Image (cartoon, rainbow over all chains, first blue to last red; front, top):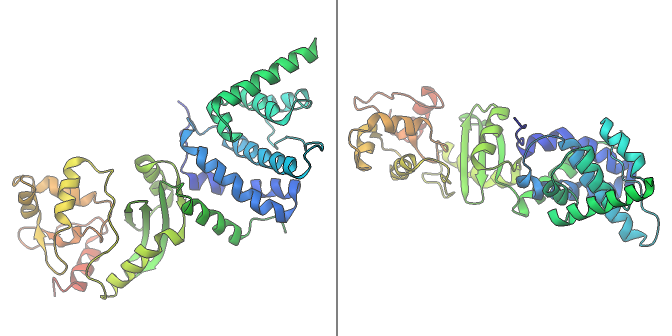
Length: 151
Length: 189
């Protein structure tokens, strides 16, 4: 049976320090503060749509990564985007991380969440702040590019 | 270390979550009221939970199961209930202005609890009398069960319901507390 989604308080207490450290390293303390709040507000909005309580750490770190990407995009519209890596040591993710490095951030996140963490497209959509359809599209576009690259 | 989450930032997030209306239940634990430690939970509609001597882990699971998983501690959200409880326990309030939210209880329980809400400060009734008021005069025992499962004791005054022979019978928060509340209200000497 799937692990039930825990009360948000339990989830928040389990991951807030790590998310804050992650954001602090990426953004510096001051910008990390706003990003921290935005990360957990976004998680809270998506929370009722989660179907099970697995991979919540990866899920929230992905939301945080997405916010780092958004902030970077706003700041340097044509510049290079920061790497979208979470700190999770899951093997599936580690294998996918180098493979997907060249993908645009959204496609990369969708591919990694789908195939590395086995999240549903609805969850991925929520994590990326977009829709289920957009998440599906991003994942399949990413996979198509990876296939092309390997040929 | 500079990179730990500050209490200010933590509180700011909690307040923002409540202000944006994203929570199923906001709760807080009041560790030292005149009647001991209480957990108070509020929904958008009112106070939905009061527990004596709460075991937070178990309590959060139950709130999530009944009301939805977005359960978060936000002291500011329970401020009004806290103040009213303090005033009541200090003898300065006879009636609660906060609305009880009992949407999640089964139909029969709701009917009984709505009748219970009419029992006045400083008076008592019996399980049988309350049962009769709901049109089920023989359901005294079932009414006892409803009282025992009352999600918002004190605000919905199940302490005012006693046995037909005048004995205090029972109370979810312990008989000592039932006695204390009835004494506070002047219903017993």
